[in-house]
Length: 190
Image (cartoon, rainbow, N blue to C red; front, side, top):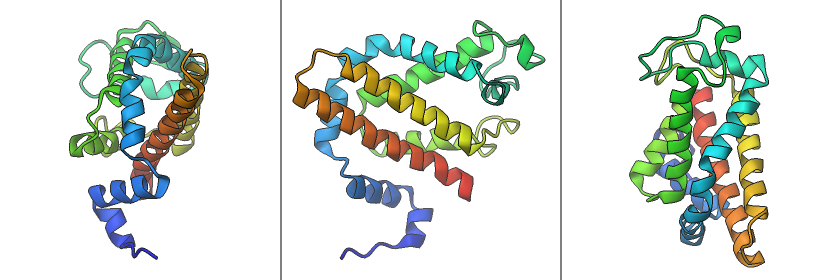
């Protein structure tokens, strides 16, 4: 039985990431299949981003988080949810961030900087990083992560990849998104 320092899991990001990857079984073969999927998935990023934002736009509880000024955005902000369309400049700004995130997932490298980046993605959805006005409830983050996981699986299932490769890619992305979900959720418990 392996001994795990549970307090260190909460205080040491690298230790936590290593524990998660070992426990879930996310390793070099998974990273390799994710990176190998870049030519297949990268061209679909704009479509995936549009689908995610269309889903977010469908619910007032998710869309309201895009009304306050987003960190790094210096353009005009909407005054209400009713004023915030899918083509608003602030939404276009956020779509660019999501596209870069998705592209980074499939281009790596999976090193210490990537771990810090994945952790920052979690933190930025709270008032701990980015805009102090933005605190996305965990239920909405979990719903979004479930939607993203399903969307990625749908894309992978529709490919002409050999079944073995397709299965490996789906499993790899599933593991990665569970790790990402943990690195989001941890910022809601501290």
